[in-house]
Structure formats: structure tokens, C-alpha cells
Length: 447
Image 1 (tube, rainbow, N blue to C red):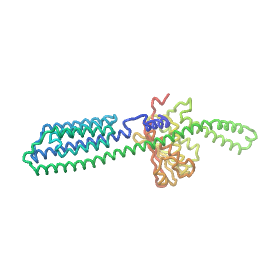
Image 2 (cartoon, rainbow, N blue to C red):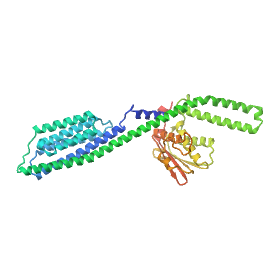
Image 3 (cartoon, rainbow, N blue to C red):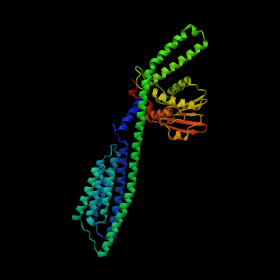
Image 4 (tube, one colour):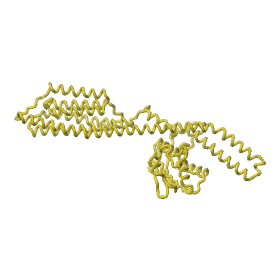
């Protein structure tokens, strides 16, 4: 199991752009935009089929059905290829979006060439391609789309297959053209509203995801700074604590002090507290990866939580704690001091809110280990629940309060888990869920 610090640094590298994967928020938006273009192309195929049927059979204007069907088959093939492309995990890049938009423009040009050229009222659909390019593509690609559509339109003024209008003459022909322009305008407007709304939603979701990643990076940077500060403080405290331990040991052996039972007991209590401080310092250094010669301790999930509860009960003024374990079969894990400290933070918070009772339950839910900590205190305020997991979000009113839950949430997140909090009848409840895959032993963990 990787340490929390390793996972924090890995997340920082991801948020900084050092490592880019297919799950990056920008690529998620591009994949959704590609899917929107696929939907638009299906609508174009259905619309063209309906238009061909109405013109050829309704208005009795003969059209080259074989050639136009071949273009429609090309659009269907492009959609199938685009769907197969989306099944691959590789990033969707600007060049791919540009290519499919260019092919759409060429398919539109082919249909217009076969149905009257520039005189066809549906030439207004070129504007849809340009607007989509302006929203989806980079600057150079957008101008390239403008050049392609302008070139196609200009080409249609010279090269096209004239329509055999038959009995349509004069005013009837002009009215028919106006009707076609109206249909093209309505189609353009409807498609722009529908798909621009969807694409804008995709872009807003991407921006929100990027903002969330930036926030996480800032929080994780805060954690790294706190870790460096704690590690430095632990180094500085190690020597004076060792000196105090030696001095108190000498005092216990002095006849004048040893003869006084009350003083001897107080010295023993002081020495126990100093040793507890030394154990905390050692745990900080171990979490920072600076304790040498320590082999990882292989244990079970139940043994890991049993040790935590035993340590917590022996070092805190716990009056009554209900502890229930429902694990069943679970793979062996490595006892990680960072995760242990996270769980102790949860227990300490519950004990502080409810000194007379704390409920602790550990259970397995499918592929997760779920720790539920309940207390009989006043519960969380609405403001604390809305800002749960943010630094310095505390009702204790002391400097630095709220960092415990902040660390709990971030360490759980690095392990792929989650932390939730809510108020229950008679107290508060905090649930820590961790995937077993993040806790079980890996070969790289055991040396």
C-alpha cells in the first residue's frame, strides 16, 4: 500500500499537467463533443433522406437518387468509424474534430452539387459547420473550416448538376425557393440551439472539473507543506524528548523522590506522557518515510483496526466505546501509520464531542472496508456539513482547528476512498469507505 504522501505527490503531478491520461477533464469534454457531432450527423442523414423523398416524390423534381444515396452511405460509415474511435481510450484531439467537420462539409457540398449547386436554399447549412468549428476547434482549425466552406460554396457556383424543374415556372419556382430557404433557416436555428446548448454544457462541465482539480492541487500543496513542517518539528522535538525521558528516569531512582509515593506516581505519569510524545514523533517521521530500518508490518484488516482501538483506549480517557467488527474474509494488508493516524483523528473528534460514548463499526461492503464512527454529541452545524473536509472548518474556535478532518478527507481521497458526514438522532456520524485494492499487500510494499 502506497503511503499517503506518495499519493498526494502523484495527484499534484497529475493536476500540474506532468502526467496526462485519458481521464483528463479536457479530453472528457472532447469525447462528449465528438459524440454530439455523431448525433448531429444522424440527424443530418435522417433530414437528407426526408428532404430527398419530399423533393423527388412530393414535388416530382427528379434527383440522382443513386449518387445521393452513396453520399448518405458515406455519412453513415463516418458515424460508425467515429463510434468505434470513441471506444478507444486514446485522447480525442483537435485534429480529429477538424477532420470530421471537414468531411461533413464535403458531404454537404456533394449533396448540393447533385441538387442545383449554389442555388439550393440549403447552402445556409455551411454556416452551421463554421459555427461548430468556432466553438470546438483551435483558431487555425476554425479558419481552415472557413476556407473550406467558402471554397466549396464558390465551387458550387461554377460546378453543379442543374435540377430538371419540369413544370415549375416563374412565381412557382421563386415561391419554392423561398420555402426551401425558410426550411433551411428553421433547421439551422433549431440545430444551433440544441447542439450549442449541449456543447456549452460540456465545456462548462470541463471548466468546473478543471477548477476542482486546481482546488485539490491547492489543498494537496497545503498538505505537503504541513507534512514538511511536521517532519521538521518531529526532528527538532526528538532530542529534547529523549533528554526529558532520561532525566525523569533518573528522578525516579533518586531516594528522596522515590520515598514519596505521590511524587513517584507523578513522575511516572510524566514519563508515560513523554514516551507517548516520542511515539507520536516517531509516527510522524514514519509517515514521512524518514524512519529507517523499519519493516512493514503485515496484518489483517481486523488486526489493523483492533490495534488502533487498543492504542486509542489505552492513551485516551475513553469512558465507553462500542466496537463492532463484521469483516469476514479479507486479504492481508500492511499496517500503514498514515492511515492509522487518520482513523485516530476520527476517533479523537468523536471523543471530544461525546466524552461518555463513542460507537465504532467496521464492516465489509462488497470490495470496500467501511468504518462508521458515531458519537452522542451536538452534531455538526449546517455550515460545517456544507464545508466538510475543507481546512480550518471547525466549531472548536481554536487556532488550527479543522485540520484533522481536512487530512482525513484528503488521505481517503488519495487512497480512492471517500468520507461522508451527517447528523443522526442523538449525535453525529462519519463514514470512511476505502477500497480493498488500496489496502491489500502489493509486492512492491514488502521488502
